[in-house]
Length: 356
Ligand code: ADP
Ligand code: GN1
Ligand code: MG
Image (cartoon, rainbow, N blue to C red; front, side, top):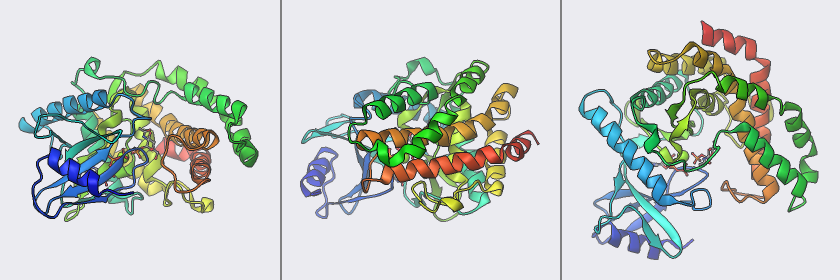
């Protein structure tokens, strides 16, 4: 892709004036296209928003800016210690730039930081879980009614199952033949949705991050401390079990989410323990007993539900998640089902850790 003209246009919009304008991709998010834009003096993170996933980008930015303001006031009163992701306005005061049919936004670059796709030690898992817990804590008194529902039914397993069923039925690309076993496995687990409905009814509605995957955490590159919780695009009312579950999903396996080395896609118990310690201690004074009991269900549901979403997108022809090749979503789905199976096998052990 030719970024030259985009880079120059964005640089003009955001008032970058140096001679050496350059733009290069960073990160490995599946949804937006994230780039670093610099003129040699200032650095901005610019993102082409995925308008298939977020058809109303102004709502997305509106939500993020409200959260930004809330966290900034917490930071000012000394009750939030992490960095805050901040939107940058154009010189005309806008938060979105339309260019060549695409929509872009800019964020302040948080320097001396890194994100990673696989956690390499328990200390970092505990740090990240503590930071996601601190984020949840800080949003506890945020008025959720102010937020737009940017993606309805985001963590609604019954709805995700319905979508999968529709795609199995319509099979627009004839890919169903290549994943009959995966489909049969999913079908054998559909009753999990009933359990979810029963448990959700016992839980308080919270403002959740809803995408607590490990690469949505920036670590300090000098100290490895948590630097900032990022990717606030899906912050919406929800249940903490999903934020807990998405950490388990993305921290616990020693393999990347798209690894095909399935025998190694397992829950690392020491990492699970670290998540429990980090997250529960951060939200302890607000966590209800029912929420704590629900966490094991969150740990099971998240890999299953994301697996279903990858499989659905595979059948649909890869319209949602960015893919590098034709079977990428299928490989991701199989990886997630392998993790789900391991969590189910270790359920008693994992529950004991949560309750200890
Ligand atoms: P996506 O929605 O596609 O997942 P993210 O907002 O998570 O996009 O950004 C993708 C990656 O870009 C992150 O994992 C991180 O590595 C990097 N990144 C995003 N925002 C910043 C920022 N403000 N400062 C530094 N790095 C960032
Ligand atoms: C997407 O944007 P990113 O890459 O952090 C997705 C999440 C999935 C995740 C799977 C808006 O997250 O829901 O869990 O991929 N985000 C959206 O890796 O759908
Ligand atoms: Mg992300």
